[in-house]
Image (cartoon, rainbow, N blue to C red; front, side, top):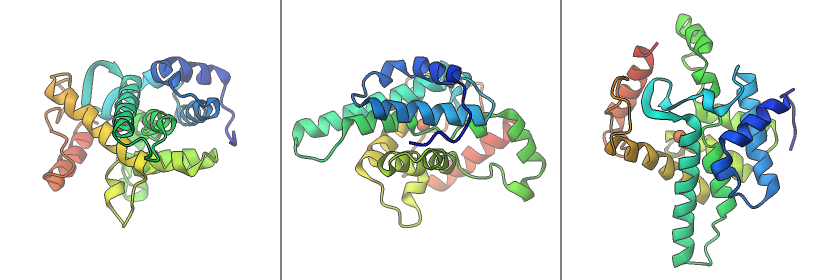
Amino acid sequence: MKKPFPVPDSIRANVKEDLSPMLGEIKDPQMRDYVVEAWAASLFLNGFTAVHELQGSGALDVLVQKNASQAAHLCGTAKISKGIGEALLAMYPALPIDIDLLVAGGLLHDVGKPPEYNKDNRRRWMEKPYLVGNPPVSHALYGYYICMALELPLELACIPGVHCTEGELHGIQRSIAATIVHYADWMYWDCMKVLGELDASFPYADVILAPYQNKTNYEENFLKGIRLSE
Ligand SMILES: [Fe+2]
């Protein structure tokens, strides 16, 4: 693993604390380091010092969970991913499913969110969307960039890279870990919606996340929600 950015140790310590509920469930210490380093780098490069500073939402001011930070979503997605993997292994022990990779991937899948959650960035992009786009790239692609900048293993880097709709586009076939984390991510938000855990005062809090139903309307509403929130 490379450490190309001058990230202070205090940010690493904050990441460890925020993700501690699930980080400790990763058996391989190197896999734990990958998660901590990637999150610390992404936070540092985008003006944050801890995961809990990021709103607990699907996107900035969209699908906002009550009384929870982004750390809860990451730990929840990691926990659900682990559960899916363990259930499949209980049925078919010979399947090539790596639980450490699922937990690490669940914690890392949204590592590309910090630029989108930086309100100065959002304002800058809104001013000249013709120049750099708004946002310039998806958080999935930014997450993949962070992983590759640190030279993380491809089996881990691909999880943030294709966890959203990217995985259904351009002839991409997701890995088994990326497939499980993708569904765990959507499942988390779907369950929060059904359980009434989303804050209705934010736009499109009632958009039901059904990636394979009415996708066009969902994506339109999602983008409108982001723009209205500025
Ligand atoms: Fe997510």
